Amino acid sequence: MELNIIIDDYSMNLNVPDDYIASSEASFARLDAGMDEGIQLGQEWVAEPNALQRCQAAANRLLSALESHNEGLAMLSAGYILNRREGTQRVVIDNNGDPSRTTFE
Image (cartoon, rainbow, N blue to C red; front, side, top):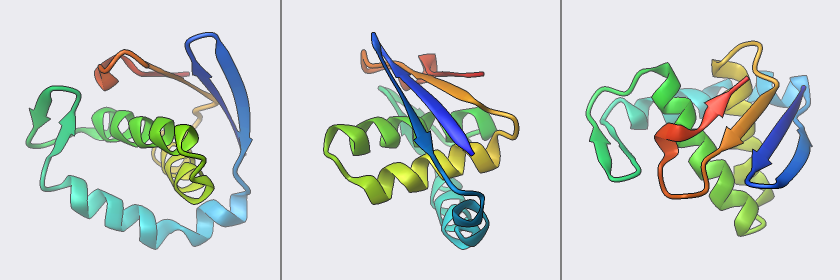
């Protein structure tokens, strides 16, 4: 699967193989288990994040991974988004410190 990532004026496509997504379900479940405890979404603490908020948090991690050239975390974050938001082809990541403004198409 391919995820188009847009950050400000920058756009890139990240190819996440279907077999990677299928083999990463245990990792995605661990991410969900951690988020069950709540997440920091920008300056707001969300005690019970919904599916959209979880993917916004994953997109924020994806942004950090791209900035630090952490390919493993980038793949995991993108795979999580593709797996948990079925049909997503694009993520527009807010780069101004407010992950709740990140959108998915």
